[in-house]
Image 1 (tube, rainbow, N blue to C red):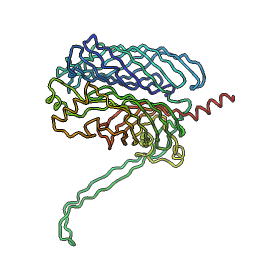
Image 2 (image 1 turned 90 degrees about the horizontal axis):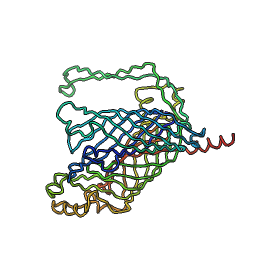
Image 3 (image 1 turned 30 degrees about the vertical axis):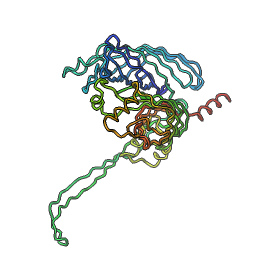
Image 4 (image 1 turned 135 degrees about the vertical axis):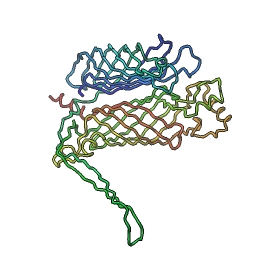
Length: 445
């Protein structure tokens, strides 16, 4: 886990030799630790010869690879250091890239060879590569090979900005926790039909017996001391199926201790909203618009908080495991270096501008569509009714490795249900207190 990051990443595939083009950059996230790289990208493509958005399917690419290369660096402290690393990454990849809107799977599997360069400045990473992918169709029946644009050669470029996990600042230590594995099994016995003399009625007697077995066991976790931090964040979502893209920058402050994650955040930018209108109704009203939708972006500022449960520690030390008392004291306040959290979020959003529809004259067309179909306009179906401020709540899950994190969150608005949405966020809670202590210690030495 040393010398790694979680970051925001874009992939610009080149489909023009196949008669298609990517509709903007495909957005995603990447994690790199010890040379192992994990990444995913989502986006849209379009037939160069088509005049309809029916020819604008969505695509996705997943990669797991390893980087061959050596970093040349200067500086002994991660906060006061820099490095450069030329590399060749070899990745196994799965892609879903259809050449039209389809309801069937058109998956491809292949290898991607990515020569690139990585720059590191303190806790910030910049990586750029050219990706040469060779894919084969993985569906051998159903004749869907003709729908698969991903098979064959797919080239493109990737750009990533990542935030270091703070390995040397958080100093994880491996602990072995002694205790008992707990297994419970419930048995059911049907004693048949009996007669109750007091009530003068028949009843069926069923007896349940639970047997609990204990066996010696242990759990192993890499724990760090509780910490707090502040860092940047970036929320995003790709242009996709009836959805406008999201791009919001912000700042996050959080603490990690015991089983809890607690964050406060602020972000601003363009919030992308998906159109929920039935596309068949649009086609019936405007046959010549083909696959038109009413997705839009809206400028916004959001601020709020998150509180969550550390599932990694919970499942390791609480679920079906009973710790020894000495083991409990060891793990009481510690936080796993690698964590999966489930969380609840709430806060407010200020909408600072007018909606920008994906398609030209979107607001006017939406008003006309609703009038022709007898739809009563409200904040549930028309962006022009969005209030200046609305409260939100939501839920999500996060992957955290050291100080860096990646979250997926679903937001709902009681005051403005039309802007309910889902997005991804990458960011960090950089342990500033430990950085200051480390720098001060080195200066004194």
